[in-house]
Image (cartoon, rainbow, N blue to C red; front, side, top):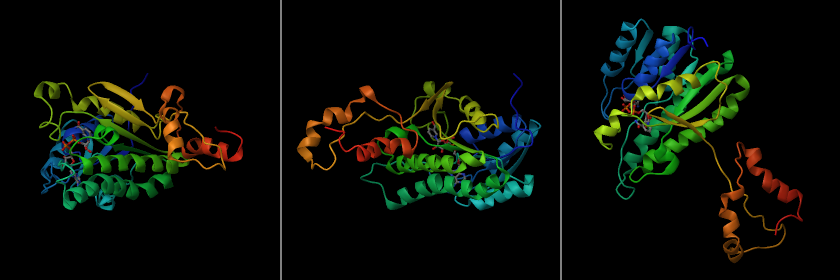
Length: 304
Ligand code: NAD
């Protein structure tokens, strides 16, 4: 099989001045993509800014013979980041929404400011850059978008209410964009990565971090960005060489007969059936999700 390449493709990688974003940018550039290396260059808490993070990665890419330009805008200003791609390379084919910060604190102690800044960078930022690129992708009938969520958002984690909410918000955004982009050859997938970076260096032991290279996440991201990859609306856990797909699972459930009132005691009595996953299904869209309810409505004799 010939090496998969990105020649002629233009990619924006947000938060590419370090960690996972840097690795994604280097990976795409090494395969021929022209890359906008976006990074605000602030702290892991979202304070300050500097051009040096993005500049350094652009230098690295150029030193390896690749093409890249730096952009220092916050992801909240997606239009300016997409404009950098248009100014330097004339279009945008790929958006990797990766920029992120942490403001970890228990819910009890979390301030409105802790909440707001995390929503702004993660959720609003992913929307803003995607939104600015969207008309260009629709017009050309081509686009690949990768969103970055987190196990914390999927499974919940102590001290990360702001981050968990923003990260699962990003998954909701990805699901909607995947549906809206499907007919226009715009595919949208989401990764939940795990890798050593400044966001994880304080919460994981060094021995573990040594084996969690960002470079083990980027091959999946690159594949999801490739024109031959037809995956969309996917959610993948990825780290240390492990790559797996996640999906929703629903129990067979219980349908109370239509037209007959039921109460809390009835719900309690049927709780076993409501929560029993032995005959589960895996709805992938709202039509599939609504099917048992619509079937109950059109067959009032069903249920018990
Ligand atoms: P990192 O801190 O090394 O990288 C994040 C980058 O985003 C930084 O370079 C930072 O300057 C940049 N950034 C922050 N705010 C920005 C803004 N407003 N505009 C533009 N750039 C901004 O951390 P990382 O671990 O590489 O994280 C990358 C992404 O992966 C984040 O979205 C993070 O939440 C997610 N993630 C990481 C892990 C992990 O194990 N490292 C786990 C789950 C999710």
